[in-house]
Amino acid sequence: MEDELEIFQDVQSVAFVVRPLDSEAHNYISTMSPYTGLFTIRTEEPLPHNMELLPLGLGLFPRECVMRPWLRLSKDIKQILDLWEVMIGRGDKSGEGRAPVILTCGGKNSGKSTLNRHLINSALNVCKGVSYLELDIGQTEFSPPGCTSLHNVTEPVLGPPFTHVRKAERMCYFGAVSAAANVSMYVKCVEFVFAAHKGDNPLIINTMGWNKGIGLKLLVDILRITNPDTVVQMDTYKLLDNFPPVTPQFKMAEQGWLYNTQAADDMQDLVADGHELCVVQTPVMKMHEKFITWMAADHRNVTLLSYFCNALKPSQSLLSLVPYTMPWTALAVHVCDAAGLKPSKMLLVLNGSIVGLCAASLPEVKVTGDSHPRMLKTLPVCQCLGLGLVRGIDPKTKLLYIVTPLTQDELSKVNVLVKGSVTLPDQVTRQQVFICLQKTEEAMPYRDNLTRSIGSWKTNFKDRKMKRPGAIFRSRQK
Image (cartoon, rainbow, N blue to C red; front, top):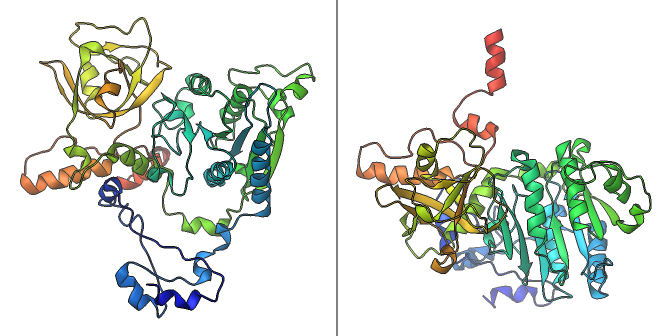
């Protein structure tokens, strides 16, 4: 290998050694379509040296194949990173005795996640740790989808979200990938998670790309709750996807959902709650959209699989893990959007579903001897220890069989299950069906009526080769 690299000795260059990712979770995920080949080396026009290096798992790439324009940081981004390091280095305070706080906002596919990773890595150049507040429940960075969370990051972030899923200091399970499911409850989840931030570390806040109507009201509430020192606004070439200038005047004049329901009369408040606004034109251009092969639902599915499969051993799969048993007499259950659900149907709803494993200090959560779990009418805003998959239910022994990466000690603290719209990726179910069909011709559970998990109606109807509901309605009128 050193002999082959002698050609670079007299050239100012950097050698990147790329090796396969040694992770049982990612090996398992890569067995499912369309996630095969998560990390592969491709050389369309191999260099002469590749003939000897490729058998070793190595490859040489021309500079123009690696240093693409969209991989370079713009001057604006570099200035923001330099400003961020300076703020941390000189210990900027917001007047409340806390470390500096920066908030990123922008439309979909504007580059917020990439910028946040650069902010994390830049902060670690000048401090030992940085806090990360995840408020985008549909595109999470460190936690499973459907959760607001607060993380303490102490090492650089170098990969996509599914490569660094980790435990949170505080996490609240919202149960959906869009705040539109319960707007008021989403704001309460934001308050609950942000309350855990002590202010010792610099804080990076990631927000949603919802830039119209209720989305703007939620941004105002987030600004009011977190009171950031700096707001970085990412604008794209799509004008309709951009936010209006998120200035201090916007924060005070725009009505929120629960906060600032009336415009400010006292302009002095603008000085007290002011922040610095940095508007950046995103480097993501229209020509780059053709390189986007994964949709938002794909990222959520892979992140969810990575969360459940982190503890896999060789030759294991998610459905081969031994589940824990939990007596439902010691649990309370909340099902999101379950108006009119009869208690007798509760077990049917829970079976085969993803649930949030929560620890709530609520007076109504107590041990009961009912024939079904106790139901909670409202979503409890409390600490979520993790997620679990209900593999089965035994009505005779009143036991739930749950697969989860939590330890037994952590699971003993759970007294509330929250069932939302986050579902098991259908690739897992189809893989199980395929294996079972090879062994038997009998009908298998959960085989029919498969829908694209945590996806949009577009992919769902496309998979079923059906038209959009509105199109069907119009065709009937004709």
